[in-house]
Image (cartoon, rainbow, N blue to C red; front, side):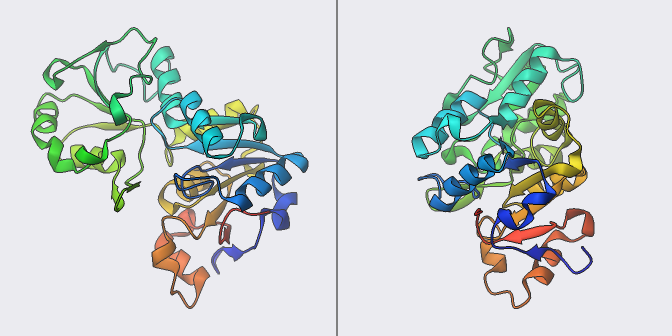
Length: 289
């Protein structure tokens, strides 16, 4: 690892190193239009090789919603072994309220989601507050593009921070793809709330709860035999490394501009990572076998 990640052309080259795969969604399987052809073949070959394949996504929506989206984009439900979204982990955690970061949040929440989606609280018996002044906590699952800039939320979040209302962020991504390119994602709004003095608890990558949930779903395998594949050093790689898993960075995703003209790719990835604990074990141009 001191020399940086090892470049590979496909996961088949390291197939003997892992038994389970956690695949990122955006930037790895697709970018919103259709599943990448090489990704479809890779998932099929992984299954043929006896690997368990879970999609691990920082989506504030429930797993079923994400599975329907993947099917519409070209990856049917029976092509992989399951979906674990940060929204699903948040919903399950809020239902049980037996472990951090879900303990002691209260029963009345102010919900911020994309398109008014309420699935993240449906069936939980929570009261949904129309005004943040009436909330015990803020549940941040997604953002509409029109209100993605943190400044749009300054007034309401300033009030919430003054009242010491905690925020549960079910999508820590800092940027997301909008109509005109990258725009602020829920993680950026959560960081803005922290800058106002608010307390934020996180569920998705790179934070522990979603990786713990993945290990539980897989039947508690040895983490060192689990491979995390994704395009974000901050989320996929950092989270996987912290969970003691193997990691492969997709170079053509969110970091593609930073890496496009690099003369020394391993060194460039190390620079982006900033420390060995955030450096991927391998790097690959796109998801392929």
